[in-house]
Image (cartoon, rainbow, N blue to C red; front, side, top):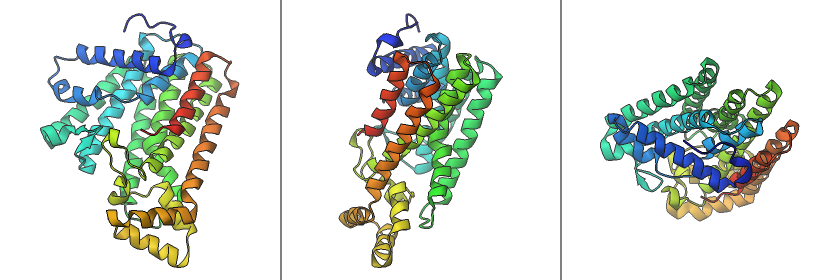
Length: 325
């Protein structure tokens, strides 16, 4: 992880992603003698935009620090823990593909998947521990929230009475919380003032909520590059925000038709589903909420000094709302 000090101010998001990717590759090489890394490295290095560690690096410099190995290792901690959750999620969901590749457990067996996920959790915490007990406490709180969010989502599978409040509790635990925690940790590692740390954390909450809502919309179009066909969440009975909104606003025959579609969903009912979502205005509603959360994220940074890093964070937030992959 050499030669990265102070580079973010002159670089764009793609270059920051490259810095993070290089650091991750180097760290995987450091641990190459670990038997568990033989199984875990493929998913660790499977690509992606490295949303969480990139945002952590940007938040670190926005807090007034200069990017260094200390922050890169902290950012990798969050990414490795996130990857651990994906390994276990794939087992939980019985998923066959992740980013278009066979999932770890489908390729090597459930036992290897569970153990490899445990290994990644431990490795992530070990990296985080380098920054002290307060950082570990935030990481632990984040993972507690994530577990609770996942279980809440499971409890609401196929539950047509799921409320918007239920939805926010789920996504705050499983998606927004980890992003907010990563931003908070970046401020802590930078030794920033408490108001700066809180502003970065608020930014993470709002971006994380928008991020999940974009995922909900992408489920209606599919995501081939991620190996995720359209309607995956619908088939699994997950209550995404467009569905919750439509169930809340539709009445009479339209509401009954939507319930019937959801309870007996198949590909040949796809057009029927989309038509009902259009009648309810649910897609437009979710898009407006995404815009609102992104705007709140941007506003949360107002107390930070203007800098190139702030501009990159704002760009990052807005791109997360526009992503199509």
